[in-house]
Structures are given as structure tokens and as C-alpha cells.
Image (cartoon, rainbow, N blue to C red; front, side, top):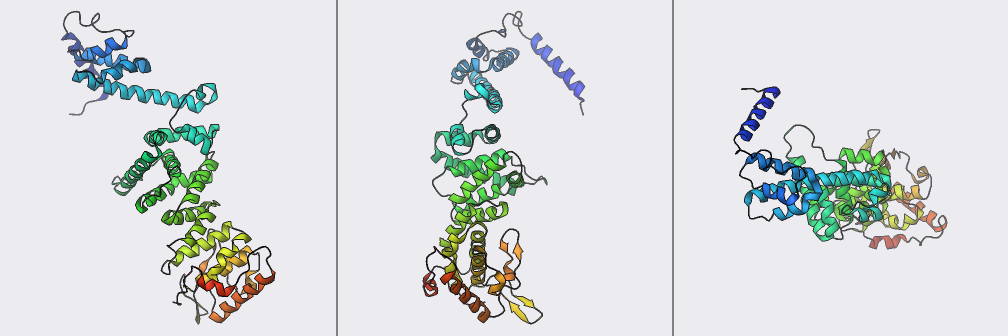
Length: 413
């Protein structure tokens, strides 16, 4: 049977009348504590044998709010099972209501807001921002992830475990979503995850790092990095994460830096070039890192790049030109193009006749290849000659020393 809303209200009213009618004479009225009854009396009434009295006492405790909390918290430990159960429910509701009230006062700013203490606010204010914009962002973080911020305020070590669990939970929600609609992760959640991650001194396991990176690539967060009043704060927080990241996180952070033009990508790129991940079967790490240095760096980074002029690892695909010659880029081609770019030299003077710019990665890698090794060697020699006289204040570049540098001298493919 399908009941209309109107019929349901009638049925509920009749049930309430029946319950009240079943109460002993005098129970309705004098025996029911009034709205001004003291909290201990109301808590005691939660154990009444009459359902209506228990419900009314519970409603009035919720109405009294924080003023009733002391009595309610004592009631949580009552010997009466019903009182314990209802006190726990009241406590949860009152604390949630009070939390929302404090958030509203806090977001409004002014003298009243200074009296509101929210977990981790002092840390956020000192590290990120304490302006009205910062307050509004922090309120969103509190609404979405109050437990994470509470744990962080108590113990950064415990926050490490809490964050690991939380990002895994979010990842599972997205992975096992069967509703057919996109799982909505609030911007406040992503900002809180990023903030807590920035306050960890230990590196996260690979899987957790991947989960955090996944959160940072959600559409709403990426959009907020590009526009809106919180743009600057979020970009600063992301820059901190990128600058501190290591291993796989450094690679993901560097890629996000190039996408959103965040200068801390330079730190991640230099770390990647020193990392153990720099292996012959992973030339894309070196390609993107060299590109990021070219995008965010200046002439001071030239000594960092020059050893890679000895890296013959193939990168990208072989491309036929005029149906005859197959061009295939090597890592040393990328290094040379980036060096020429940082030195503000004309790339065509170094044999880059087909070079094409890329909006994110500086150059299209397929446009950097040389037709023959002889042409490539001539271009590198030209750079060596330029370095003897063209750049002052940098350590001298000795090509022979580059063979002992970290980049592998892989065979051409």
C-alpha cells in the first residue's frame, strides 16, 4: 500500500495520542519535566518507563544544548542502559550543532571569531593563511574532514595513520562506485588531505602516495587551482607538497607543477634526476625532469643538465621524414634543447630545424631528434665551445667528466 504524506502525518498523530492516552493519570503534564527543568532531572527522565516522557526529555536536552552537556556526559556512564543510550545520542547531536554554530561564528570573522578555537587552526594560520579567505577555506576543511584535523592537532604521528586510512577509503569509494555517477569528493576534503600530508615528516608508502596524488588530480581541486578566491592558498599548499615529495610523489608532483605552472616543480625535477628511479628503462622520468628544469629554471641549472649530454637513451618514437630518414629523439637531444633554451640561444643554430614548442612540457620531444649521430655530435660540440666563452659565473664544463655522471650511456634503440 502506498501512503501519501498527509495520511502518514495523520497516522503519526493518532499514534502519539494513543501513547499519551495510555499514560497513567497525571503523567502528562506535572510528571513531564518542563522546558526549564534542570539537565540532571531531564537525564533521569530518559530512563522513564513511559516512551513519551523519554522522548520529551531527550528533545529538551537537545534544546538546552551545551548547557546540558555536563549532565549528559555523566549520563553516558549511568547504570541504566536506556539513559546511557539516549545520552550518547543527545551528546552526538548537541556536539554537532555546537560545532556548526562555532564554524559559523569563526567564518564571520571579527572579535567573536577570535574566541572560537578550532582544531589545527593555529597551525593552518601560521603555515598557510589567517585572512578571511583562509578562514573560509579552513571552515570547508573542517566541515569535510573534522576528524583528520582533530587528530592532527593532537598528534602528527597519529595523523599519519589517520590520513593513510582516509585516502584509502576515498580511493575505494571511487573504485567501487556502482551508481553510475561520479563520486563527489569535496574541495574541503582535498585541501585537508593536502594540509595534513604537508605536516608529516615520514614518507608515505607508494600506494598511499598514489592515493594522495589521485585526490590532488580531482577536477574540483584542479579547477580551484586555476580560479577563485582560494587559488593562491591552494597553489601554495600544493607547492609545499611538491617541494617535499620524493620518489613517485615527486614525479606526480612535477607533472602537476607543469600542468598548473607551479615553480616548486623545479625542486621535484632536480630530485628526480638524483633519484634511484633514474634508470635506462625509465627515460620518461628524465625527459619530464629535464623539461621541468627548462620551464622553471634559469642559467644556474645548466650544470645540472650538462651531464645528460652523454645520455644516449632513446626516447619517443622513430618518425619518418620525407619517407626516408627516421628521426628518433635521445635524452641527450632533450638536454641540449633545454640548455640552449636556458642560455637564450637560437635552437636552429644547434641543428634543431624542426623544433616545436609544447604548452606544458616546453618542447615536443619528437621535434628534437637529429637525422644522424654526426649532426648530434656536432651540435653538442658547438655547445661545448659556447660554454668556454658564452656563460660566466658557472663551473667549467668538461665533457670527459660527464661520462662518470649518473645518466646511463645506453645503446641506441
